[in-house]
Image (cartoon, rainbow, N blue to C red; front, side):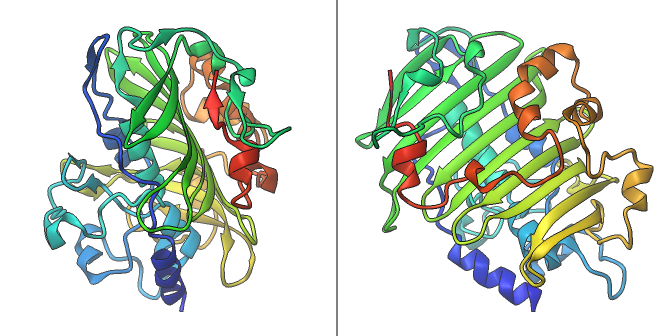
Length: 377
């Protein structure tokens, strides 16, 4: 029954935020290094297999008669295993046939999932820029204008404004995207905003913000901060912190609309992309259950996706289940003082494991005019 509900829900949610900007390894200011943090994210975040026999060989079987993460719709949707965008990007391990069904298969980034959103964030971030190819300027919360009078256009933008030293406008297919970014060698901070971009045959236009912070060591990503909010065929928000070096993460996802739903999770995840084998470890998740209509707390085995009988395996690994302060997350994610300061706006939103209020996610199509930037000064 859970699987049937999940399939129906996924079918309704398949409209994506859109893939209408190409990934580029250069900008007009000079050479730019690709920041393939999507691949690193696959090695650090939970990946829940689809309810399909084609995916059965990718994970060890769970214990007999046991529940798995795939049995719960919110976990199955948010952490769904996706790893490529046909035909331009492939982050999959060798045991995934990305050419299946002419590339339009269940491993393709749909942008209704955490991995899909992170891929889009990488696509829009433009890589590690060593020079400003737009206008050298700073921005703040007053730099944005909403379509509606007395709107709050930066409601969903986290205050990393001091990190941005360049700003500009990119135009494609007649649509404008406003961007701000850094040119520092040890991190890349990027903000991309889009307002009512038409896509496909949907009755909804795309309105969203993608905000990315990637810490670097010798041009290799070590940590990720990711903030997304969007209104299209879905209303959603994701705030994510990832320690790529230790395969650890903390995340919260909200879906808006008639009822705000949540996934709140912390722990260890990911697969070894060279082999496709999941890393050992557990993660703790608090999530809205479609069946009981309540929040559930579960400890999940990352290797098998099995739901543990209690939280003891998570506790044994030092996972800060039900954390009550952002300092617990900073320690668990290996953030030094510098990284913790830069990621303070993310940590503030994830200060506790309690669900964020519904004001943290769009609830109606008109919120695009109230709470997202129409333009940037």
